[in-house]
Length: 310
View 1: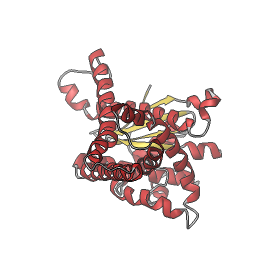
View 2: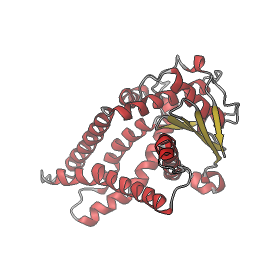
View 3: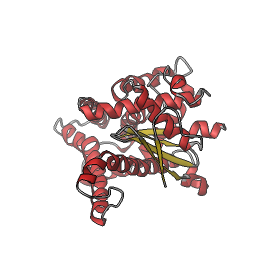
View 4: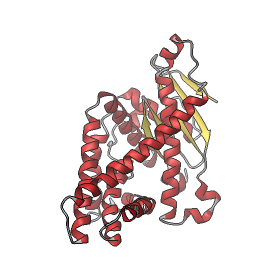
């Protein structure tokens, strides 16, 4: 398998399942309540390949993050439909046929969630920091960044207490183990993936932590925001922060092999001790099925019945 595929393979945990993405396609595998695995696979190629200028460093980060968000929302919607199959059958409703209103509601939910995230992690810390009336822009941005980091860590911890989220975190661990097996050129089977750690340097959790830290440095250059316009300008720099953070996360895997640079990777790995949990073999099976499908391999890993949707 090519180096490109090795670098590009990655995924995301969803409700009772895993999304896996390769350079040419993505696949979502979800465990049905009856134990079967249902898979949805579609071709996908990043626009950075079609428009070369979008593949430039920093710029490519924002593009890839938007693509990841779109795929993630689609995968979560699909996994939610599978989880609600039994209830929908009782109500005589076909989960695969969503009404126009349901699609609009999903879009509005995504927009609201994104806006809420920006407000919670970027605007509310500004309001709290304003209360201290710091004159120094350096001190202001350090305290603002500290509030942002505290909010982020508190959010991660609080959602980890939710039983349903813990299941997602277990699938998150299964996703990492499967990717490690692929990168280690192991057979993509449960026995080969099981020994690997659930902590991966390119994890989205590590990325978000880097975003929090990079934002402090970027906002330092913008000085202290004195007006509403100054604060809105900061929000406009969020894509740049994401792009820079993406470049850091790309370097993290190579840097993690260097004892000195590994110190910069460790905080993200420590945080993954919360956002990833040890999966069982049935969860590993789902992750491996998704990965094998994304790589155009035979999806059968264990004894579970697999249904491929078109």
